[in-house]
Amino acid sequence: MDSKINIIQTVTGSYMVNTYLVSCPETREGFIVDPGGDAEKIKKLVTDNNIQVKYILNTHGHADHVLANMELKHSFKTRICMHKDDADFFIQPEIQKISEKELGLAASGSVDIKLGDGDLLKVGCLEIRVLHTPGHSPGSACFLVKGNLFTGDTLFVGDVGRSDLVGGSFDTLLQSIKEQIIVLPRDTIVWPGHNYGETPTSTLAWEMAENPYITDFILAEE
Ligand SMILES: [Zn+2]
Ligand SMILES: [Zn+2]
Image 1 (cartoon, rainbow, N blue to C red):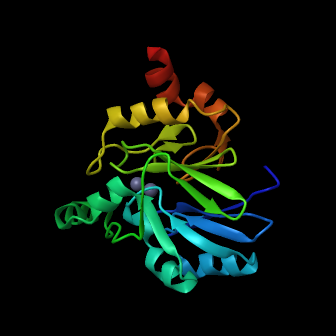
Image 2: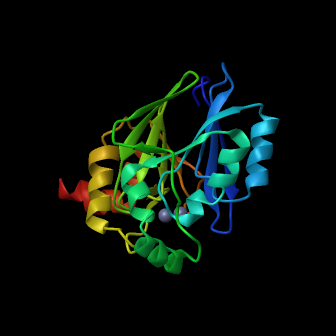
């Protein structure tokens, strides 16, 4: 791993989401990706590592990725960021109802910063690029920082996210992976939203060789 970035992966909530605490070693500033619950556990990680949390980033609005948003926002006096298409989608009462039925927990409430594709966020020495990757949900996004890609439920190790939930589309999901992800350098490290694979993390080179959704549905088409 690049010595100019610290990444801690931990599992939170009943849906076993991968939550990430990412920070700049020089300034101790950092951000949290997908706080899926267990706010106390995340707070302890932040305190133990002496990090100033600048943002909470959500890869998408599903309940399992946002559960500890509000508690951590207030603890760290920080702001919640999500792609605008999920922020606007899950706030609709009708969609809230459907999503809660699907996942058993309420989806995202309001967010503070609505992101768009290509947006850049600065955290200490780190620059985070937002990649809009719809398909698992309308506003699913991946976050690229120093060769590390936080993929949420868009791409798992050897698998891809569900497209049968409200607002999902399999074709759109594949298109996102094709246009936004596999065009990145092969040594990009993939940090998924759940540990559904054989390893907790992989590289884009590995995914392009082994992930059947990429090899059979995307690369085979070319
Ligand atoms: Zn999801
Ligand atoms: Zn999930």
